[in-house]
Image (cartoon, rainbow over all chains, first blue to last red; front, side):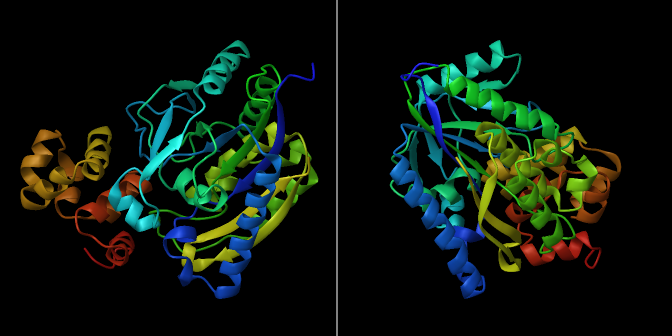
Length: 281
Length: 83
């Protein structure tokens, strides 16, 4: 690999609960402060890393895709992305609707590289809008929306799901793709979702703290076998929203390193085990 | 179930459809070709039945909010406390 080739300079993963921006005051003040400080720490780290582009990996909650055409993975290559999707969603999340810049060149490279690596993601050249998936964490991490994005969507909202191993391997492919191009020399990977939560289910408001802490422990071990050793049923025990940890597995594959947990707070008022983590790279 | 889930999704996307469903549910259910137990349950806002039949919880919850079922009522209906 030549010195001019791109590299992944940072990998982060965060929850994206609407409560983080939409109703932060409902959390216990100490929990809110701890979560916001962890987001601020990641914002400072990203500023220091000065990335050219952020590959942003999340799910989307039927805001774009539906059961008529539901990709397991998708890569977006648009010039820009509107978010939140509607003014009403913006009011709920307390985020003014605006455009987020894209990095179409790196997006197209990543899509082509994925196919050549025998992955088969969907291609999204335009029309994608953001929901809490990206809008919530980016309000804290890039409040001016300056960072160009390559959105990557993983199905975390409707079973059957891509396997944990496939998600990790997709992340490894992302790393190889970044290192096989030279236009974006410094790339950050940001994954968002999870941890335990139930959306639209009877258990909503429950948090599976044991699942969450065990997941963060596995992530901290850097042991990819442990990290991918989940059945769908085991993840179900932490709620339908816990399936979003697939995005964290993509991040782990892209990092190829263990993570440190910057914060974990089970926040019932946000209906979520809220976490922020950073790869030790 | 696909037709029902399509309705759930469209209601969230199109506010006019949500309004129309509230005003004339049978006409909307006709348009979407929803029949049988799912039709009866949707017309009655029997969300528990739709949930137990496998409607995606995200789609069901988002649709409920659009047709005037608030969060508390949604979960009460899901638990069968309101029917």
